[in-house]
Length: 198
Image (cartoon, rainbow, N blue to C red):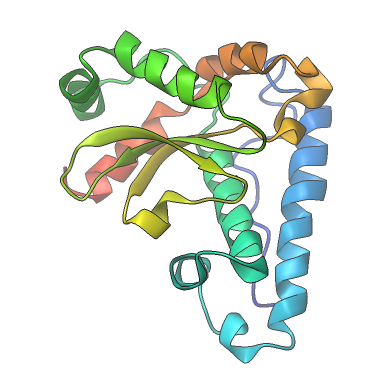
């Protein structure tokens, strides 16, 4: 198998009551796994796909079936790492300094991120990213869209496809966003900044 489904960084029940075990089992076990399986089916007959990393497929394809599958595998893995049963609250250290610098305050950042997630029409993602100029920015992407295609470095993402929250919150995306802030994994984002020597 060219591509594998990464293990969750937490137990499937660990995010409850904010995200239920049932949601995780469907979202991870059906949707995320489904993207991996479909991408592997293509890789079995396409050596170029089989010999590429997810990041290479995302940046080189930018659209089409292979891009959609590769990006959705990558996006979901990143989403799981953006969540933690020990998350929530505000970031600290360098990340908080950058948020205050680029958004004026943590509340200013949170408002921009919520606006991107709540007003996004249809399926997609909200992201906190680092630009090539080392500025933090909130962006939204449609469907399988991924900031890597624009040279941006993701730090945090929130999945706003309905399958991410419909079991728990039906169509109340705002309630899902409130829960997201209680489990967002700031340590993951801070670690990415350290890796980038920022």
